Image (cartoon, rainbow, N blue to C red; front, side, top):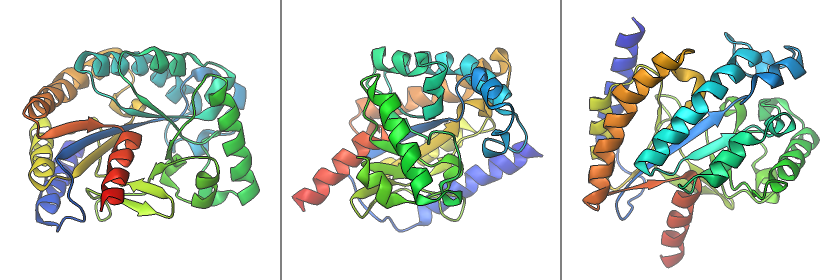
Length: 285
């Protein structure tokens, strides 16, 4: 049943993108990938004693998600390195309290990844007072700056968009806003001094690579940004199931996208690099 629902959802997205009137036109199509690192390490689940579970998932504990992400992260970094694809990794700030190895791996990667922020405690910003949000953003800056990282991209925990003025204050340049089937789209638009790198498709474990290629073709034909996003824990708990998704979905998709890149019709962008290119276009106009 889930496979049928997922297939229909992807088919509906494909038709919607084909029929929608574009909000913008780029020099070529963009493929943007952003990944939410909700926990990053099972030690956070131990440290928080289960009190933060509801802010992460309705069905999985913080401990379990941290354990899965520890297992999955190196597999995806290796995948992106092999295909030379830059990606936005939205990192949870509190992870730095127990383990900064993920950020260090990204810094040392041969690919220039965009290391963004995903809140400090992964609490929905709409539920927080302004002073609570400011405190989180301060803590993120301190933790990231100690590793030589100044995050420019922000992904709201649970897609709870709020307090954009504070993102501006702390030097962020772009964010991913809330999307669903009715709100997903292929565009980047300015909001104050920030840019909304709008989500196009939430990519879960049941996605069809053939339909994904068709959506990439739409982005190329209409010269639009196609922004897919997912969590590291979306693809199963065992290494075997994760590798299967990488081999059957991601690898064929990336081989196709790289071919279109060689044809000069598609570029791989992070949230931040896409923002920079769009900003230059607006300034030229």
